[in-house]
Image 1 (cartoon, rainbow, N blue to C red):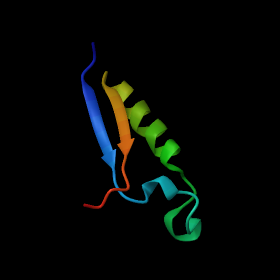
Image 2: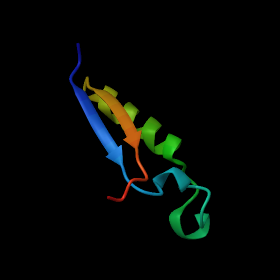
Image 3: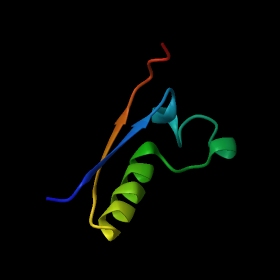
Length: 56
């Protein structure tokens, strides 16, 4: 089984592509997840992404 990489995305990244796309771009968090998964696969790894808005 391939090694697992876990990526934790922080507050408000769930709004990528929605909030101020002229500043932050049009890619969504799902787009970022797909890119990370594709790169991980190139190295024979698995990728798990999570997102939390918790700031504490």
